[in-house]
Length: 114
Length: 112
Image (cartoon, rainbow over all chains, first blue to last red; front, side, top):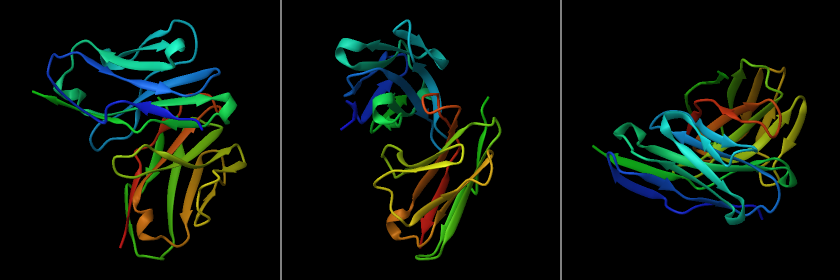
């Protein structure tokens, strides 16, 4: 069955620390990849997406993610986090061979200490 | 930006009392989705509409129904809410099945 794995459910960082959140998926074919963020009390917002082309994609608020096809991974990174990055982050994958359903990972709760 | 609007933001109902949640979108998205999200869990797809075509997920309980009277509006009906149906319900829209989905703010349902 299709699955999306996010390695850490909770991450705590100090401001200015670097961030990397892992995401792996289990599809073998062509995929579209997304990172969504959910700030406390707010709705899911798109951070960035990968459909094709340059595997290093840049999103809003200084986030980027790298698609590594051989590793089935799409890790999210930010060089220097801020307190305002405290949120829950969801990786999601959409694949034609699975009916184009958007399948989410379990989410990673990031807390940034000021 | 895509706008997906959900009303109400908070809904309280009684066990077994039918409830309807509404969603509207302003960019003529062809596809609209309903997700259920429980605390600290990923959103779970309940069903989606591609235009007027309704697509139910295999594990969505019969208690959950949906209507899409026109392109802009989509409703989620819970016929007999149980305590286990308390959750955040998210509506989303996209142009096609493979495009980016834009989410509304959600309706938090409490079942007493």
